[in-house]
Length: 271
Image (cartoon, rainbow, N blue to C red; front, side, top):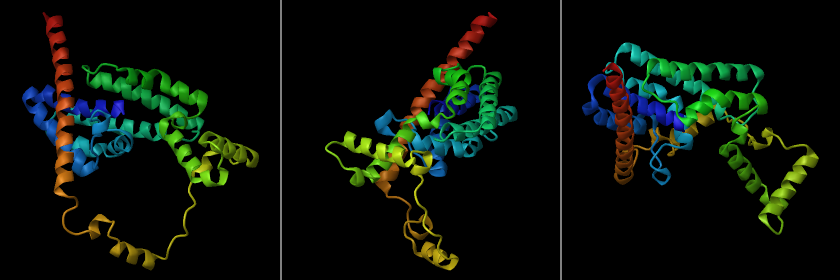
């Protein structure tokens, strides 16, 4: 979450570095609107007005949409460097978020990607400071992955997945308390030797015939193409735009302060 936010803020800092702070806030508004319409994510007001959880995953996968907002507005070398950072981060996220044991080859690849991404970030954008999260990614994440075989298994999402699995089987292992019910479930799985990541995979339905599937899709009102009219009501859209602009103001303020501090340091060093 912290690295995704830092890369988004870097886009604003790039605009400020090229055209000055006057264009920074309008660009931040444009970036927020791109995330809302193209990536289809919104900041979470109950979490400090930042992007969290699945929104960060979607942003990482949709990093090309963010890069396109800078096309023609910054020097080509900066645009290429920024686009490469998103490509590296997208590759890292896929390893970070998977709650499974990864292979030794993937651990080696992850280590080289973390080293390359942080060094490349500092080389191309010298005003970026190494935050605690970037330090953890650069110095400790690969070692943790090598020692324990996974990072996602020990994350909140994996715990929530097991919590959902316990809830789905609560009726079979009811007890006086919820903790006793969970203990009964774990005990039964241990005896049956079923306590593995495969337990979290839901049973898939048999695929329907192609004609029947296409017929259902053509009449399914849950799909956006079949709804007709506006995709969303005016009130939710206006609320999402308003929250996006608040997020944009926040990252512009941080980006402007970061680049101003860097510029002042250069002036003092030159004098």
